[in-house]
Image (cartoon, rainbow, N blue to C red; front, side, top):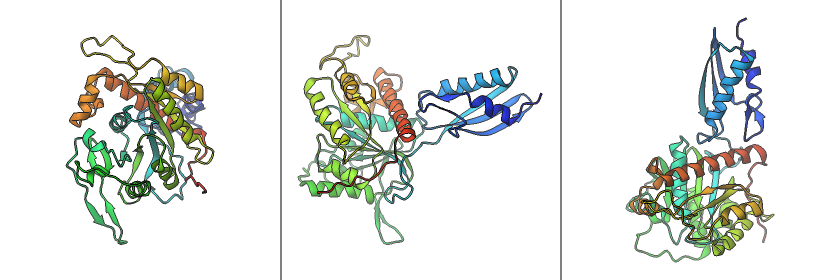
Length: 367
């Protein structure tokens, strides 16, 4: 009997997307089914190019066709992606941005900006369109980490009379930071409202275009900047960064709980434990738990949030940041593999969040 499109779709309806808990056909993830005798070709639309389950899903599709349609079929599965979004269609700001991700920490010095930079590059390397806002107005670090300290963004006038800032681009990522607008040696000493105004400008007056992910590198603690962000744009979710030590964990709890307040209610995508252990370059198999062990994982379990992963404390991460070339660019190194794993898990949690939770809303906080 000849193979039909109905046969193929019926077989694929038994292939489940592991994270979303539904089959590929119900999720409308199958497109462009073509049949020529025993040649069967179709496309699977993943929810993110950084999907860590890509090969598992592909093999499951091939197995389903061979089991339920024909063991002699020659199956070609084309894997592509279309990043999902949980934004309202009528939201005016950042219309072309599918997901806005806040990267936060309760405490300074936990490597949040380093993690954000590497996360952004890892997502871009997977094929996603990525932007990064350096929201730490008083201590901007993004220009240094991307090697663009001397860059100055262009400003152009729109047909409607508005001025728009063109973000700096490096490693395929659109970047915006106060460091591009103020001399590197000058201190930005602003009160909360002034810093909040700068963040609003980065959101409303920058030409971000079409993005799958816009990462917001927040300052440490819980401040006006955090409230301004959630009151200005709908935040898809927050990523909390901590180190294993007790003092960092205590502050991470405050950062986590801030997003969980009923009047804010931003989903926690997960927690990353940075500087989880020290590994010297000459002894790559050794792990020294300088700041304690497992504090981040225990915190995630205690508050019922996903544990995104561990990032080691290695000298090359610091060196890469100082040179303006994030560690993730050094393919194959243990540290870059850790960042790649974090990026895959973040992308996965965004997809799960978009499929299972209510659409993102701008937060309204009444005085």
